[in-house]
Length: 325
Image 1 (cartoon, rainbow, N blue to C red):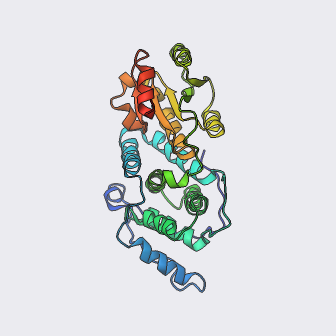
Image 2: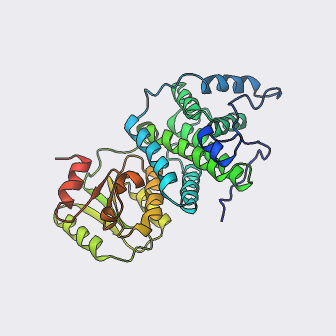
């Protein structure tokens, strides 16, 4: 089933993918240009945005480690997972970015339809950082973080979802564009999630069994061990994907431990990590269970911060990951 989103501008034609991927799939590549030249309204704004999108990339505001981790994560997902799993990952990113609810929406500037269209064109172009430049320029112009997220990022995600639904962009194009959006919000995570109370309980953690995983003994033992060591652990078993994400949004855990015991859980695990990264950008995410031994470098592949390889070292390792005394 495709993602169902409605648009106010059904006539936007989509640019194509970057050359390296486009050549493989026979997709024509276009240069980032002013798609609205000659329109009576918004031409000047769009020309200015085109200039911004083509300026040298200034990444001084980015959390470079998170930005690069997100980029590598999406690259690995596209190369290591089957196409249906990659499509599910792209759909999850678009859905989460498009419909994240605001905590403190400012009454400041929100982008116009034309600005969203140009941002989508930048994200779909062969320029890897054109979309980043537009979003970073909005930040430097003093636009509030929630307005950047809900106006630019969510607006672009909704527009991409509509274009995908209406078959005006390909699966490959949406995957690349959603990866770029995910990368920039990870790079700006400290800015976009500035309402997070970092002084909250460091030993507050969620232990969640990946949906459809049936082996429960390990997570039950681990929860008991951590609670005996003074941790405040919430344990979740048998819950669907959206219920787990809703719990992380409601309680804002400092760390989330996702437990899986087989390689067949890989796609579900990746979707969970991506959704938590989007909704709780400052949370520490750790993978545990037999999948740690079954999948090489699983933390990098799924986009987690680290793994817990065994119960004997689990408490000390998680404590070191979130770095408290």
